[in-house]
Image 1: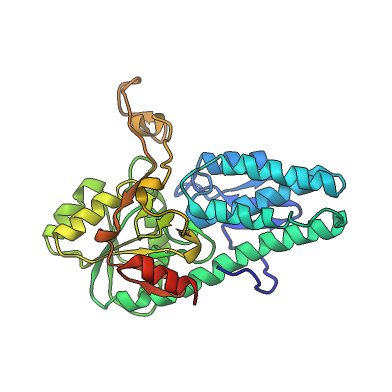
Image 2 (image 1 turned 30 degrees about the horizontal axis):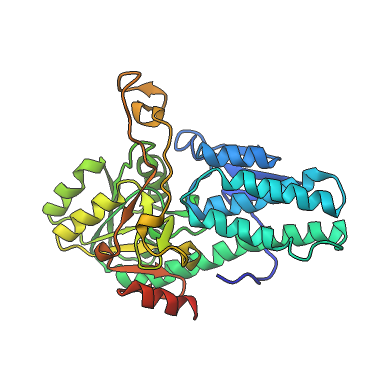
Length: 355
């Protein structure tokens, strides 16, 4: 993904926006019952928002991370040396929040890259460069995902049923998401589709967020518990499965919200094509296969309770990985901004990345 787009401006409708020295994010933990924004002014506040999933989705996290670094620079109130120190501290802090999502690190790398040769640059110039880079990351995200939505129309046929998992709409990025936004655009273009939405335990991003986005867009949908996916496939209601991804390996193995692997296996068993939609910035070309991806483990409380209501014994042992790995052999194609990568992915992803 190349940086170099013209200046970008946030709007009041954006779920993330930077204005007057503060980052405002739509609190995804409050949806769908409450539409509220959080005002963040320090890297620590941004890091906490990422950890508690107030902002989530690989690309939304990347944007928040970039502006979190900028907030660190703003709060330094010092000379160039102080700004560089603050930026490095912010990068380290925010990088520690969620280890799996590739776009988080991609954005931090883009911000930290500005420090190369920054010695001798005056404070005003460095601050301007940091803000410009953060704005470009937001701009690139919007333009890239807009292209993904267009490319994805190739696989959405009129009259089909589609199943998705977690949330990969605009909430997970900015203005345009990936998999879910492909479906929303297909509906806008008059394709008669029906979307089946896994609720996505334990934090219910499918129920709380994807259903909310689909309803606002007027897309026909049905909400399912995660365990119902096989049944609706057996009944012949599903023709396509598509999800987003948080990190994709060189060989095509993909990490996404836990439960995605199970969906891919079910799709294979029922002869249903399974697609991933993600920007090329999500591809980690240094990662050979899924075994090398570090999987985030989250608080057991998330499984023992729903919206603060305990549903299991207080000390019930819990296994709570945030993501699982879908092997490349289960993936029919990966929808990117440069086209659809198909097996063998090591060849096709490299080809698209060089385009």
